[in-house]
Image (cartoon, rainbow, N blue to C red):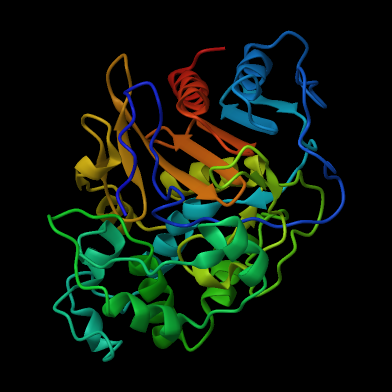
Length: 370
């Protein structure tokens, strides 16, 4: 399940539909049909560059978009066809949350074999292999995420982590040293539960969501809904007719892609993480020690433990993650010291032009462009 190879000006496509599998959900403050015509911002600073960038994203054909940039000079937000405080399924950005909780566990040794805690994992892989995507594990197919027929038939199906793990173990291994797989983070979630005696969702909530006051962030369990304001998700599954895919049970993405959040909460999370609020210095150093990740399709791209490192066009680098859910795509970037963040999401199918416009927004926000 390779990640698409995009141009330098596109984006870090971690967790694409073929690789994760992200997800989606639904309730009020939503569009009954895919909107057409020019975007109309619901909330923005008049004439701001950020609003123009969000409008440029929607002009690529997505149903809506929203973004927030935080820096020492303040917070800027822009929205087009999405609610001002809209929530969405963040897909693979969930992995950074999961990795953070794992690294908070004092008894977790990164180079210890996973089978020390999960004897059902018979392969010779370490915790670091899971977090860094160097285990060689693969992902089982999820019908609800791959076709309109599968979505209609299985959008409310519940999955058990052990069921998904067994299916993944039957697939063999990926060639090469670095290979992105959601199974790595499914097993990390299982490992967190085995060590703490509490669910992955409970640990995420108690260790990150509540301490940081992330009111729009939640682990929905098997609920197919997004509570609170949000735009609907749309997917065409290769056809000419977009399908409303807002409703979905996200249990197939425990640990890897199940969280719901907002652009503001995500900016707060990544700023706190790189700013040293969530991990001691030694553990943060482990997280941000990266290896080459050629599967990301960007020259010089590297991956640490639940977070990627990407080069900036003008020199230097920033930390990042991309998440794709059925009907939603999100990207977050943060400077190495946590002083600046940029987060953007779209609803609807994206194209390479969409990815390029999202990349321009992230790079501008991280690099200081106003």
